[in-house]
Length: 123
Image (cartoon, rainbow, N blue to C red; front, side, top):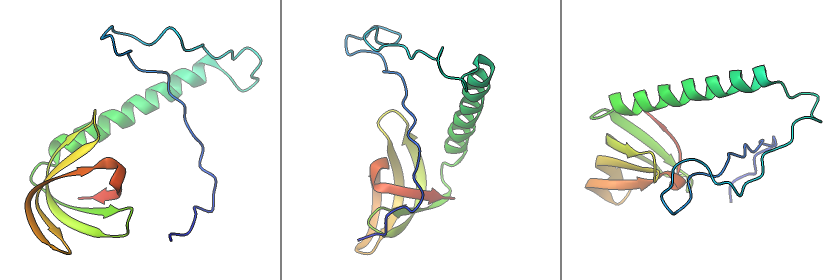
């Protein structure tokens, strides 16, 4: 069994996404957080945080767009490392499509890796 992470990791709670009816926007049933009592809350800080998150997401998506055809190494939660040629990523469902996946059992011509199984990946 893997050793537990020694440092507590903060959890970021995002607002609910669009409901299943297909309407756009966020669910009205989620209550907005009352930040009036929070001495650390500052609307400028929130805007800066949102801007930083948007910039990081854009960089990540651009990276995935330029990675097609490049060799990639995935480290899976089970401790297995596999090499492949990067194909594409489905950001919505969290899958990575790869070609020539080299596993301990052999080479697969094409495969889908679930992002929940991937601990890290590098190009």
